[in-house]
Amino acid sequence: MRENPPQDLATQPQPSANGGVRKDMEAVAALERDAELMLRVREGDDTSFALLLERHRGPVVHFLYRMVQNQPVSEELAQEVFLRVYRSRATYEPTAKFTTWLFRIATHLALNWIRDGKKERRQESLDEDLLDGMDRQVADRQKTIEQEMVYEVKLREVRQAIQALPEKQRAAVLMHKYQDVEYSQIARTLGCSESAVKSLLFRAYESLRARLAHMA
Amino acid sequence: MSCPQKSKEREIAFEYWAGTLDAARAAGFARHMEQCGDCLRAVTEQRKVWEALGYWTAPVVSADFNARLYARIAAEETAPAWRKWLRRITPPVSPASFWKPAVSLAAACAVLTIGLTVHLPKPAQTSPRPQPVATQQAASQVDIEQVANALDELDLLAPAKI
Image 1: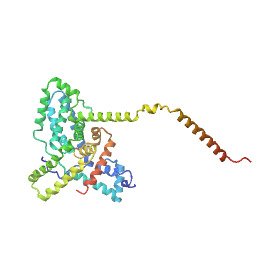
Image 2: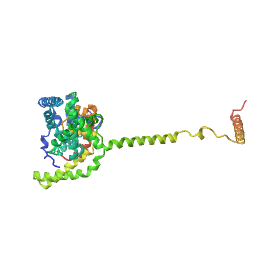
Image 3: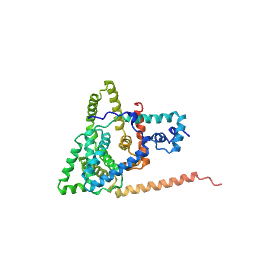
Image 4: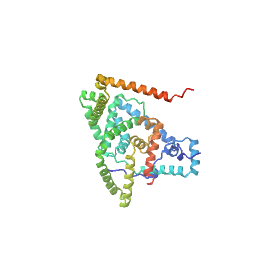
């Protein structure tokens, strides 16, 4: 498995930086575009489906990858997500945000997979997966062995800390941190209130603080 | 402002960091944080956690992802009509979705059976067994004697008449 090289941490957006009129307008335009594309898919336009797939394939696979921590499984589940979207095209109504619907399906599938206990069966391959990815990254980025070892330890700690979170907290944190999803959308995805999401995130970040605050 | 870290309002530090506090509360908390090491630490650590999570980047999606998906879609499109209809009315099944309800049902039946077995009244308890006449007479004699003794004791305990 190969992982993307880490971006400059300082340039990563913080939640407090989510505001900004321009970004909001872009987001609204993107959402309208999603709904518009999906309506075209409903009319039988497969090119629009290809565009939707191109836009959302990465975020869905990445979200699922962090939920189940296994790349082949995450891609398998992501395929199921898009297959369900395609199957439902005839009955699609733009009543909610397209991404909310997408992440709702993805979360549902991931939680089912985790609850089915497949996680334990594939846990052995997870570590091999990680080490394999590390080996390739060493070659890719020409880092010193020491830097790579430090990075590997940190990465492992982050993965373990996320994996230790209860399922719903995990889903909420992953959507919040990595997919930049708003509270209201997380709430609709998880089927709970916004205040419940705030509480979930608070508890999740408290747990993560206890395990990861020493790292940065 | 009392310290939120020492009260039930511990979420304020998180909300401040997340930028979800209203302007007045955010300003109040910022002023408090200048004086309070615990709150400053909470916010700083939260920022560190956010940065630490940035170490985990996701893998590149497989190059054949789209091809595999379109192959599945094509397979579904060419499937017989009855299979499409069946898929529409039934949710996708996995082996687990078969055995999980079966286990629950078996457990419920077992609990019900045990409950009925333990709590059903036994015939012996509902209809008292007839006792021999001699035993009944002895028992009634004992009862009369006990009542007489009790009355005597009450007389003794009563205050003497003047």
